[in-house]
Length: 271
Length: 82
Ligand SMILES: Nc1ncnc2c1ncn2[C@@H]1O[C@H](COP(=O)(O)OP(=O)(O)O)[C@@H](O)[C@H]1O
Ligand SMILES: [Mg+2]
Image (cartoon, rainbow over all chains, first blue to last red; front, side, top):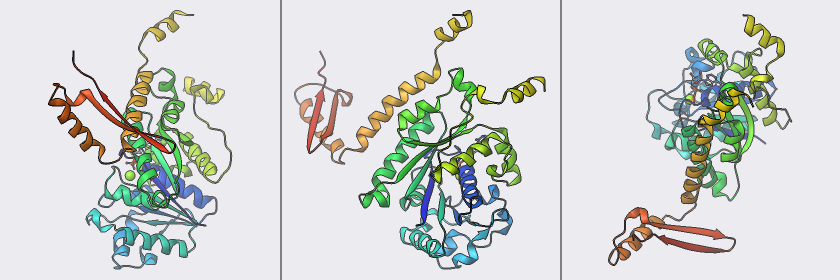
């Protein structure tokens, strides 16, 4: 049974696209045939993060409008055998995404044997964000430990619970919280909400905590989804999140300053 | 307790302020979300009726619908000025 997963947040710039690239790559690395769709019409960016921006010929809207076939528009990832990217349209208006059109594309992906379909949502709670979440059976709500992001996450949870297709059918969307850009040092000094606080406020299952890390910027500079950087804390935290998504029980890491290895700290200090 | 702990405790912990504020606003917004669309209009009309007799503002009136299992309670709170 194919799974449609939306990566959403309400607020912009919290790490949705970074997460979509990492999680879709991670699922493909674990052997699952995965498609990742950029729903950010007019502000295409997933292609850059996935390093396929120069291979875009057709996009999501072309497929919806019947100007290209799905096969023509899907870009095969160069790093992961099982991963395909469906880029957003750069020029057309957002209303090009219709419920019928999106549903048709999702169904076709499922017919083609895709096991996971990751929908990278645009910011906001308007049409594009709604289209990205409407068909989802699982939602990854990305939140930064910061007041406006947490509040927006709660609004998105409300929309998932009342306006999604599953809600309309009297069913529930499986909701996960992913806290990103986490800085344990600042949490310990009392200036950043702790992950427990965020989870308590949103009362949602915790999928993972991604540390705020320089490695993310370095990876995006090169078009490398961060999960491929196996040395980095953020990359490892995303790999753990993927494992949890697949039903494995994995302890949360990188939650405190102390959790860094003793030698690593020693090295840091002397460096 | 070291002197550093002392300073840490007296200084306002901004994260806990953030948490408190979020708990209040999120609870408020969740409550609003689950309410039927007619509630704001109902509140407005009640306000107008009361205003015929007492001078109150929007902020002095609060209408909420609470679901307790199979019965719903419409709760009306009006704070009258003294
Ligand atoms: N864990 C992280 N650590 C450091 N920077 C991050 C992290 N996650 C995201 N970023 C940075 O934050 C910015 C916004 O991320 P992005 O994934 O584009 O957010 P969104 O899609 O929600 O708008 C980017 O510059 C990205 O590199
Ligand atoms: Mg994005």
